[in-house]
Image 1 (cartoon, rainbow, N blue to C red):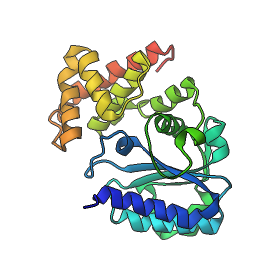
Image 2: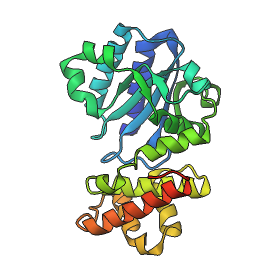
Image 3: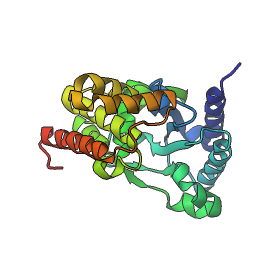
Image 4: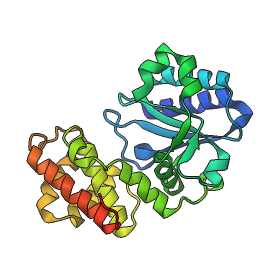
Length: 260
């Protein structure tokens, strides 16, 4: 029996081909699904659509309409997608231009004003440096050219700057989404300390072994919650959470020579 994840990926592939036709270079899944730590209940499906030429307004609207439909059958956290041109995947520019973006955060706007959303949703995104780096290390090619022929090197300083964006306000954000922030801090520290490009799960495993032992319990609790969809037992310990976030934040920025 085909898994529900595979069914959604097949729908994404077919929708991409139908919407963009000959402009399509390829569709590349990254994030938790490519790194073998996807969970239907609390992960999204991340992917990059690479085109040879810019999409028309009609193509954008058709594609977002298709993703809205697919999202209804997808994981609760939804889909997150950016359309980029091959010239910027091969010859990296930072921050990276994109032609279109979609995620659960934009569901209401897409449904209320599809034409306006598709016309206005373009610009540059520093997050793409991290996405492209992950794709070069691990991805699922839904269709099109191999990743190694589509994505060039991302300078290390751009990747480092990109992954730090998620943890700039860690001491505040950890109280809202502790599991995500704890594991993200761990994987940023793993890159900062050892040059490792890791998933959130791998970051947590690294953190349990490598980060100060006084934080081992809180990292393990986040890892257990993430891996097994368990309640995060340390959620009420706000002082402990902010202490860990401050510790990790200081290490990340002091070791990089940047004031946090």
